[in-house]
Image 1 (cartoon, helix red, strand yellow):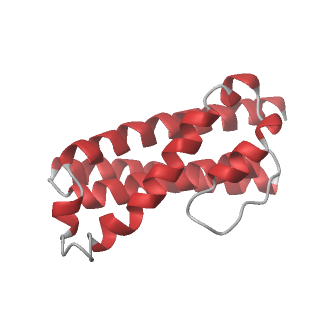
Image 2 (image 1 turned 90 degrees about the horizontal axis):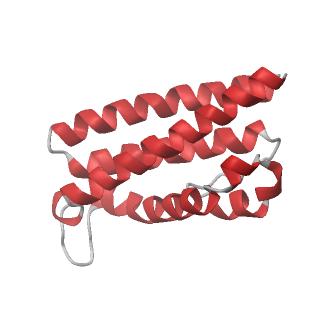
Length: 143
C-alpha cells in the first residue's frame, strides 16, 4: 500500500505543478510554464512506475524505463506509452534551456522558450497527468 500512497503524493505534487504552469503561461512566463510542465510529467510518470512496482532511476527523463516495462501496464495505458515517453524525453531536454536559456548562443530563457512551446508542454503534461490519475484510480479500485 505504501507504493500507492507514494504515487498519490507524486500525483498531488504533479497537479500543483500543472496548475502553476497554467498560471505562469497566463502571466507570459513561458520558460517557467515549460519547466513546471516537465516536472508534472516527471512526477506523473514516476508515480505510474511506482504503481506497477518499478524502481525508477533518479533522473528527469524516465522514458527508457517506461518503455522497458511496458508489459506491466494495462493495454489502454500501453497504447499511449510512446507519446508519454517522447514527451518525457523532449521536455527533459528543454528543462535546462527553460532554466538557464541558451547559454552558448547567449539567449535568455525568455528568448529560448516560445509561447507555443509552453502551450504544448502544458497541454501534453495535462494529458499525461490525466492518464496517470486514471491508472491510480484503477489500481486503487482493484485493491
